[in-house]
Length: 390
Image (cartoon, rainbow, N blue to C red; front, side, top):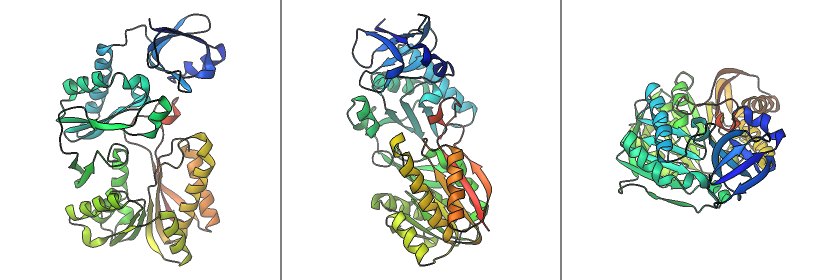
């Protein structure tokens, strides 16, 4: 045993619900011989075995539990756990483009694995998980048999764990820009330079859901990234889509994706700050039948919560002012710190301030390859809402 952690009694109720994180302030005693990243045993205040996980004294999240059983955490443990993840995805029909491992929701805290066709992208976002990176890559080769594996460990959250920001191949090199197919459309994916792991797999059902609302509509999309919602709107029969993003590289791929699907004639792309454009066009009284908003996360910590709420309200208020009566607002939030009830309240308040009456016609979250554990709030992060503006 590398170490022993004894919990404070008041911490036990929260952890009994199944949450795998143990914070520094919840620990009564730390007796650890090995350095950061070591696997430690956790005991209750009454000295009963609680579970086993990895430890990092540099993080406020001191321990992330891997198991509640008294079982060894070794190569076989990770192989079995990853095999369970893949068997679940196969059972629900997600094998082509999907999230194979969703961190805490798959009992592998700190690990993200996405699959794009024949290739896989890994993120080991915590020190303890990073120590098992080679084992994880080897296990995935045996279980899933990808043509290649790439690591996108350039996420700033790693710095909180004392980890360097790195990216590169965990297999033989392969082209990192390639095509995937989603809902009958083709998209270029850049896993080396794109956001997160290169493409947002979690919106694929929601991109299908917009079809009846955008048909025969003039559409404005803000935060279009590489044009996945844009192309879905055009394919569903939108008359024209004006798509905005601040990234020139994202827009380059967006234009390529529109051309790839034969939709370029109905898509216009504009490099600009979405907040500035929405404010300007709302003031100019420009009108659209549908406005789509899919912004990045506005808050990475609880200290940023209020600014995130303010940001969501502002962009949705501007959008609501530009929608013709009977049109639709299609809006998302991927900020896990803003729960669904708060997000809906923000939209209602934005509608009140914009003097628009709205009614909800569709609400959804993430697809089943991103499963939600009710007692782990961070696993329920995506909110996708369509309202009609009356």
